[in-house]
Image 1 (cartoon, rainbow, N blue to C red):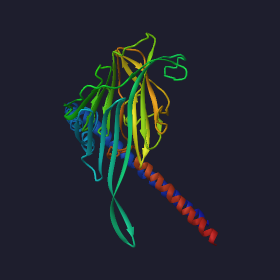
Image 2 (image 1 turned 45 degrees about the vertical axis):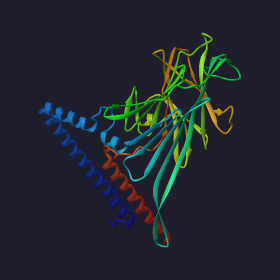
Image 3 (image 1 turned 90 degrees about the horizontal axis):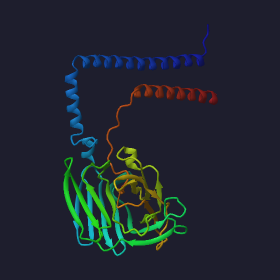
Image 4 (image 1 turned 90 degrees about the vertical axis):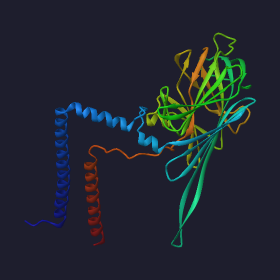
Length: 383
């Protein structure tokens, strides 16, 4: 029987695929047998294995903050803080990695509000090839944006949407955030890391921001704070309400060279460091600066929903934007936003994926078939 060249190629290719999948299956079967053997050995000496597992877990996360210690060390930052009467200068620098970077946070106490300005600078080397000659240059990228808490508005929610609408709701009073106590600053050791704490409060104690800066990953409450961000807890205490049915709106101004965009899922949520968060982000020079917050606040010790209005133009400066945090009444209102820059955390090795070798073999086999068939088709067309 005469077999055409085309059929012969087909048989050969089919045989190659069968062999590749056969080897993969044999390899997978061998791995399964090895795992089964290991499981039997574990059953024979269960107590000893458990002790070893505990030691290994402790080595990976000795400070019990649910973050791998090697990953923490890679992303550790050095923190320096200077405090004056009406200003705080915070500077953090990455300890590891080839690229140099610097994050600066400036907190200013103004006549109308507390402003928090973040500047991030990254320096890196660029190689340029010209006339077969390579030259290295230093380049720099920067992002800069500001968040400002201006005032608190007490209002009657006329349309019942749980957020302040200037055109429809009844405004009862405005509380201007001004006249401040001396800035408080202290450090403490949490999970073997230095935690920097700043307290900025009005003289009457009605509005306070509790600011936390950490050198490495640190668990504060239900949130893991990363070295690439600063935690800002808002506290409104004993507000002088004039109506028993009113709500509060915290006027928050946003300044940036580019517009802000709302984010339904934050970077910390994606990484598993926080849950139920929302925020806004502003992009510049390849960096995304963020201001995020928890969807709930503690109102007199009870967890309640926080309603946030949509972004709109600022009242006094149309080039910038604003929104309102809306809170129900309470003697103590406690909420926890954060400010930082996305994408600064150094990555770690990707874990092995079950069946990954089999997937690679399949992809290679299919690619080979496509290439050979393409060559055959090209030969026919040339003829």
